[in-house]
Image 1 (cartoon, protein in one colour):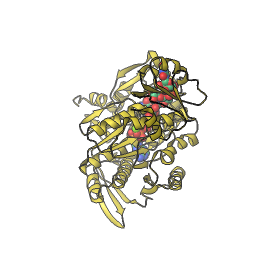
Image 2 (image 1 turned 90 degrees about the vertical axis):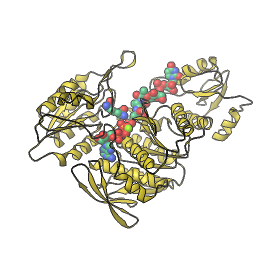
Image 3 (image 1 turned 60 degrees about the vertical axis):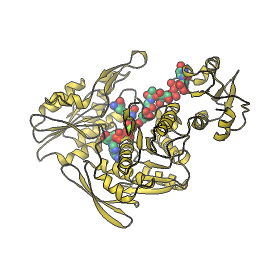
Image 4 (image 1 turned 45 degrees about the vertical axis):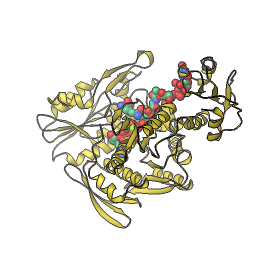
Length: 492
Ligand SMILES: CC(=O)N[C@H]1[C@@H](OP(=O)(O)OP(=O)(O)OC[C@H]2O[C@@H](n3ccc(=O)[nH]c3=O)[C@H](O)[C@@H]2O)O[C@H](CO)[C@@H](O)[C@@H]1O[C@H](C)C(=O)N[C@@H](C)C(=O)N[C@H](CCC(=O)O)C(=O)O
Ligand SMILES: Nc1ncnc2c1ncn2[C@@H]1O[C@H](COP(=O)(O)OP(=O)(O)OP(=O)(O)O)[C@@H](O)[C@H]1O
Ligand SMILES: N[C@H](CCC[C@H](N)C(=O)O)C(=O)O
Ligand SMILES: [Mg+2]
C-alpha cells in the first residue's frame, strides 16, 4: 500500500512520501521489518524515540514521532500527538472493518456490557464479537489477549481479522489506559456507552480528574459525530454521570440515558427473585416486565446499557427485550462456583475496586438467609493504585459480615504490605490469610447453611502474578476451580 495514500486518507499533511510503499505497522522496534511504519512514543517505562535508529536499521520506511524527535534515513511523520496520528494512519492500512462497532467505557462493567451486547446481537441473528478483558470472543470461540485493550496494531489487526471472518458487529471495551494511549481507535465507532465512574487506576492517571478526562476522550474524539451515547443513570445522582452526559451532549452526541433516572430506557422497578430479577422497563411510553436470569443490581445495569447499545445499532426493541430474558452469565462475574457440604454457595466475582465490592456484596445480600453471614475473601493487586486498598478494606468490613484479606497478584510488591494497607481500612474484625488457597479454604470450610461466600478480585483470571519484569512468574490459579476443590466438588 502506498504511504502517500495512507497519509491522505488519515488527513496527515506535510510529509512527502514519494513512492514509498508500506508493508506493515509496529510500535515495538523489535517487530519492524522492511517497509514498516514505526510509531515512536514516550511510554511509562521506555522512550520509543530511543529505538528510532534501530527501527530504521531494520527497514522502517517512516517514523511517526513528535516534531522534536530526530529521524535520519526514513520519512518523519511529525505530530504533536504521535499515538493519535499513528492510529489514524494504521487504520487505513488494516481496513476494512466490521460495519457496526460500539465502544464501552466506565470504571466497572465494561467487560460485562460488551459481552452482553455481543449476546443480544447474536440472538438477533447477527455475526457478533466482543473485545476486552476476556480476550476476543467470536461466534466460534474466544482467544485471550492478556490486556483489556491490546496495543493499537493488535487492535486494528484483530478488528480487520474479524471482518474477514464475516463478523459484522463488534463491541469493545475502551479502558482508560487504552483511551489515554490511543490504543483503540482510528475506525468508525457507531455508538458508545459509559457505565459509571469511581476510584481506580490513580497510580497511572494521578487524579480523578485526569482519569475522567481519559474516559471522556471516547465521546470527544473517538466516536462518530452525532452517534448514540448510552449512559447509565442510576438511582442516585452522580456528579460524574452528570458530567459525562453534559460532555456527550456538548459534542452533539445522541445521548440516551438508561437506568432508574434514565429517559431512553427507564428502569421503573427491580425486584430480585431467587435466580434472577424482574425488571420493569419503560421504553417509548410503554412499561414491560423483563425476567433477567442474572442476580444483582449491577448486572441489571450492565444489561440495560447493552440493551441501549443493541437498540442504538438497529436491533428491534422487541428482540432486545426478549434477548434480555435469555442472557447467559458472564465468566467470573457473580459466577456461582461451588456449594459446600453445609449448603453454602461460593460466588466468584471480579470486583477489584471499592465500588465494585460494594456492588458485588449488595448483589448477594438479598440471597443471604436470615441469621446467615456474607463472608468475603479478597485482596488488591500489586503495582496498581495503592489508595484503593484501604477503601476496599473499609467497604468489605462495613458491607460484609466477615472479611478475609488475602493476596491478589502481588506483582513486584511485598504481599504482606499490600494486605496491611487493606487491613488498615478493614479494622479489627477482619482476618488476614495471605495464601489465597488457604483463605478460600477457610471461608468455605466455616460457611454454614445460611451463609454465602464471595471470592472477589480475580474473576476469570487463570493465574496469580508474582514479581515483575524478568523475575515475573505466574502460578496457575483459578478462583472457581479452587472454590470447587475446597468445597469437595472438584469437577468443573
Ligand atoms: C502502563 C501501561 O499501560 N503500559 C502499556 C503501554 O506501555 P507504554 O507505552 O507505557 O510502553 P513502554 O513499555 O514504556 O514503551 C514505550 C514505547 O517503546 C516501545 N519499545 C519498548 C521497548 C523496546 O525494546 N522497544 C520498543 O520499541 C514500546 O513498544 C512502546 O511503544 O503500552 C504497551 C503496549 O501497548 C502495553 O503493553 C503496556 O501495558 C502494560 C503491560 C500494562 O500492564 N498495562 C495495564 C496497566 C493496562 O493497560 N491495563 C488496562 C486495564 C484497564 C482496565 O480494564 O481496568 C488494559 O487496558 O489492559
Ligand atoms: N455497573 C456496575 N456497577 C458497579 N459495579 C460493577 C458494575 N459492573 C460490574 N461491576 C463490578 O465490577 C466487576 C468487574 O466487572 P467487569 O469485568 O464487567 O468490569 P470492567 O469495567 O471490564 O473491569 P476492568 O476495568 O478490570 O476491565 C464485577 O465483577 C462487579 O463486581
Ligand atoms: N484491569 C484491572 C484488573 C485488576 C484485577 C486484579 N486481580 C489485579 O490484579 O489488580 C487492572 O489492571 O487494574
Ligand atoms: Mg474489563
